[in-house]
Length: 347
Image (cartoon, rainbow, N blue to C red; front, side, top):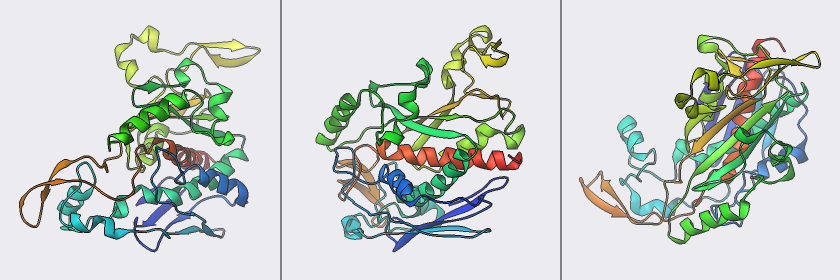
């Protein structure tokens, strides 16, 4: 997959069962990568011995080559089992990219997710960590956390942005509230050979106002385009998001006032963006993450070779809930988008 911003362009390459996955990027500022800090960041995405996680354990130790013109990171795939999909040749898995990919190029081999797999978010995290490092040097912080799993609602910036939310990932956690209840929701789905989705929230603090632009230069559009690189993301909303549709203008607007000689906002339903530009308030957004489509329950599909209906049970190693492991990926995606917008402004 490729992405081209105003200053940063990158390509994530490889497939879920290829020898390696990687990322090549141009336009990234030169930064010093803290290897230990990068490993802690990647560990938040790694598979765990937890109810929500796949049992495909990958070391995810990137080899990074960085010059003034090119940032290149490679991660080896060391725990591949393509045989788990042998009986699904020509049988698309419901709600995967399988059938759409077949329509694109006629493929019938649906081993893993191929180039549409969440496995490619590993190198995206490496690039995102470099972007987070560059932003930190400019006093800008990007943080993400799980705000809901299934029907369990946890902490949300809608009730006020707190240090527990902003420091969640730095403490090696994936949610600042109701973790036990969320795990129980996941365990319940896993016990039924099913999966569950959730909601991830992201906040960017320290971002100056006036970053972004109108039309195709919109900061919202840039961030959303990268958030959707995460295969399981099916919705992106800034600030109060879809709830704004039910409000009057007087309720939705964010009043301004002076406090100690500085401009402040009484609330932040706009999510820190007006007209595609950052307004100096915290930038906040939420993404909806769908349930993992690979489940052990029997499902109806079709056999494209035999041209008949088929009932399947997907084997292999899959996440009962992809949400906790997707948190650093969304941090990475947002960091890249924000850094690109800043560089365009010459900041």
